Image (cartoon, rainbow, N blue to C red; front, side, top):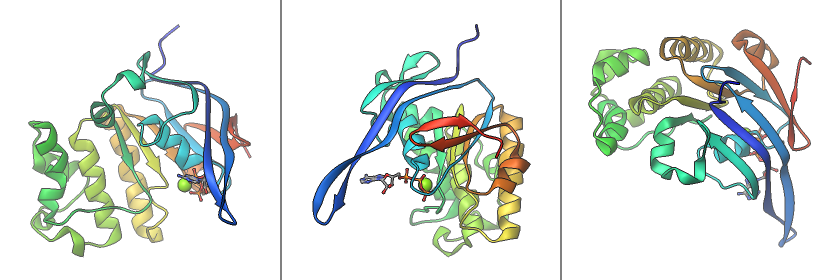
Length: 224
Ligand SMILES: Nc1ncnc2c1ncn2[C@@H]1O[C@H](COP(=O)(O)OP(=O)(O)OP(=O)(O)O)[C@@H](O)[C@H]1O
Ligand SMILES: [Mg+2]
């Protein structure tokens, strides 16, 4: 059988929550299994607080699992250098974060770090950032434009996987629709493996792909 691109086996994760100033350990993910094939598109839904963001963060080691194993191309992600891993597994968050400086500098941030020889104009094009915005102050962009900058920055590392944590939910309806289409186009164009967390059922339906729901610490096939 073909090797999975990403595989989670028996993954558990708990967090320490402060309740009335007492730390209480709470189980978030319990013996969770998931196999994702190269180029596959998966949407993940689930109640607020069910652990969707936690799950994505474990895959690029922004957070560490308690037990189990996560494999990328058959290799334990703990055997990868975390920086190299995050280059292969890009992430886009609900709220776009831009650094001080121009749009150009923001997009080139990863490229400088990795000394990638990628055409910045082509990247801007991929993320549908107009040329006349490249020298604008990134901090002054609209949220939708900032999200495009974040997408371009992730693409600069030439990732194999994109983890999308509600990438359109802080945008207005129109901007959200455009980013949604952009991400779907990029996925096809670059043959990316995509795990897309959304809280909107309509969006999950539009996105297509395999639909999963995070419930009680595990992923269930979901058609609700
Ligand atoms: N570092 C942490 N310390 C303590 N509790 C945490 C930590 N990270 C997450 N949690 C808790 O874990 C649970 C899952 O959080 P997570 O952000 O993964 O949920 P989510 O499904 O993404 O929710 P939402 O839909 O609201 O974004 C929440 O109850 C949250 O309070
Ligand atoms: Mg979340």
